[in-house]
Image (cartoon, rainbow, N blue to C red):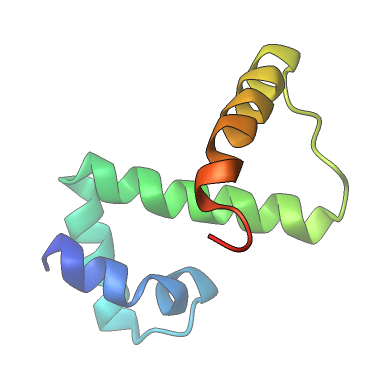
Length: 81
């Protein structure tokens, strides 16, 4: 399995709706591909956070950097661009 194939069926894999044989291919691929493993882990963590329905408090330093980046990018890519 190639990274592109894994990413094409990522939602189905994370949802658990893929054929078990395909799941084995996913697991085999991720055992040797850290970038794909990171993507799948992040998706799973995001789903868990979303399902809990609680706001997640960002660390203050990260939050400030994020807000500053968004303020800089907004005029370039915001509504009406």
